[in-house]
Length: 90
Image (tube, rainbow, N blue to C red):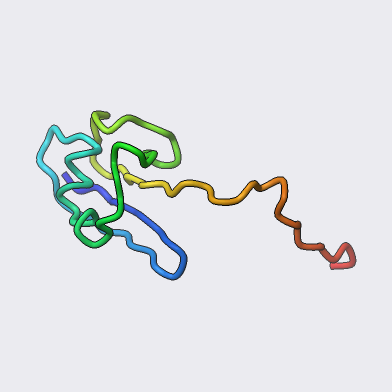
């Protein structure tokens, strides 16, 4: 079955469409994608993962067409980041 695997860092994003055997788990798809070789600092024991924006565990089963996402840790407190001013006249 075909699924997508996505990961993003500042300045570099990767989205791969890969074939995985049925049944396959999130972890199996990530390992098969080669992303762990491209980003050796990724630690699946520490990273959060999801499917279409919904957090899942590594052993979650996949369905054809699913998009597996590997999330980075938030490195700043969103409450302390200044918001951009919006122009109300637009």
